[in-house]
Image 1: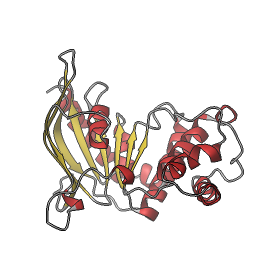
Image 2: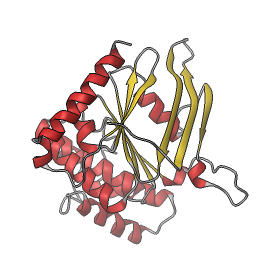
Image 3: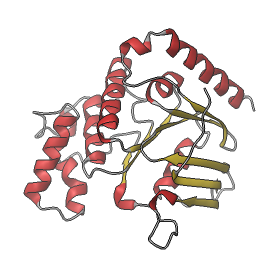
Length: 263
């Protein structure tokens, strides 16, 4: 694995995060993200992956350094600002409104954009069908399995057709079979819509299966130790999961992660 990056959509330079209690969670992160690519942030728990993701999303303040968006240049050549209306965020938990149906949960971001109720419902229903939940529009979160609730969360994040999808360990709590199916469905959606994806995980196997690039992070404080290119072709399926190539890539990523943990 090796790789180079050109024409970044978002560029992080010497980004650090120190909390009010003095904990330095992230230190001097340099990272470029290219439009349309799938990048995983891989590292052990507590290495600052989620903190970094939230800063990119604008959900957390940067203590030092800069996050710029050169891929969104203005007419005068200056960098664009964080595209709040073009970001989708999927949290570790589905965070659905328990009193709202699956359809109503997915329509929320459309209503916030001022889209008429009828059109919003039509678009939300289409997105639910696209994530495999046709026929469950009227179901409440309590009536859905964990995997189905996560599908609703993904549908809600994608219903506005964002350019960037940020995902914070969304499948970590799911069983292996459900996780594999959601990995496949996520890759299908990404290949169809080609949104930029930044995916946080602590699973080597998941990061290799999904990603074009794996950014390996070390903890205390969180910092980038390696940027690996996964040079395997898409589409990826069960044949890839059982291939010698997948095994080789997983061993290389695992070895890099082990070095990062010991750094």
